[in-house]
Length: 404
Image (cartoon, rainbow, N blue to C red; front, side, top):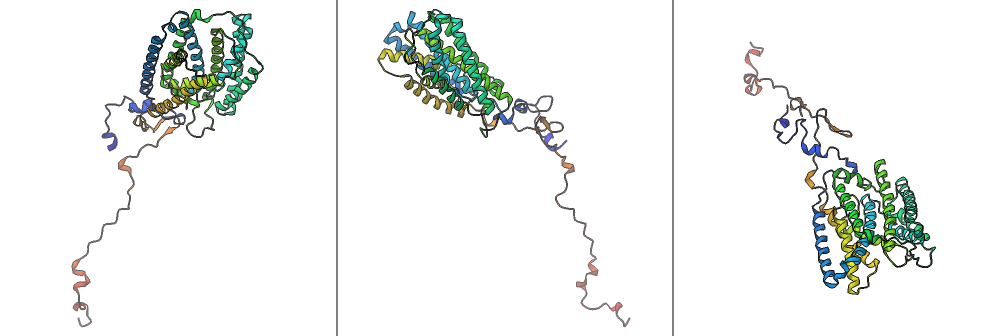
């Protein structure tokens, strides 16, 4: 045993002899991000601010017009919140996988127009066909992103252009033909949305799931492929985001008594991504909060109603742009204070033959006793007879002379 092992404190090490810090990070792949556990304190702090803002805005709305939070108005507000929340979930899901889907807005408008035209054929038929087409389009988008390995925003923007072409075939608003009223189940819709958003946030806070979902996030050259697992996760997220966007469009169309206008829907994309960033989802992918989506969606929905009560004329572009601007600041906070602590990454130590995990190896240390000397040991000097030193002789020896 060398002096390093003799002086090491083994009180914090398990019976296998491996430090607990090494065991905690041993399965982190350095090629998929920095090892260590992300900090969620910044998310909880920001969500507390969102809750405070929602409470303040709700109190102001109640003081201005209590009827806006009662009976039918409340049910309409809840369904609008669910529709916006599904769009925010669609945008947030693609953002978490570092492949933002910019087509969620046009997809929602196209699905709303389809439901308005086909609503009289029954809910399963009209909604089912819209969801099927959205899933197929999401699959095509996912294959383009993961097979060609191109940025999700660029591929989805091309897909959004194709959806806008479909929308522009209508020259006038379309009246909703169906008679389905989602307000009768407003409470159940909002409870279901809140449960999905919170459970998704809780699962996303688990270290293994967070790293799996954010595996597509680049850490070096963004053009390098991230592997088969990252491709599958990103593809599933893109398909799920398109389906959620289509359902959101159907729900918003059914909740609005007026006709559906054939707009491009890009303003809804800006609003959805802005709300997702405002909720605490990082624009770089991987990181996100727990309750942020529910709180941000509720805050924006209540603000829209409050703005109408105050007589303010604010378009979706204005609200979405403001949410996006604040959301980018939140992303900077999340990336700065949400990454693992600087001292949480332990240096791997050799165990046995020096191997910790596949791909990580260190040569075994060499015993101190076997270290080769730095310089060769010099030979011992021969003793010198002081009486034979020539400096004591200043003339030839007499007994050596010829006269002897």
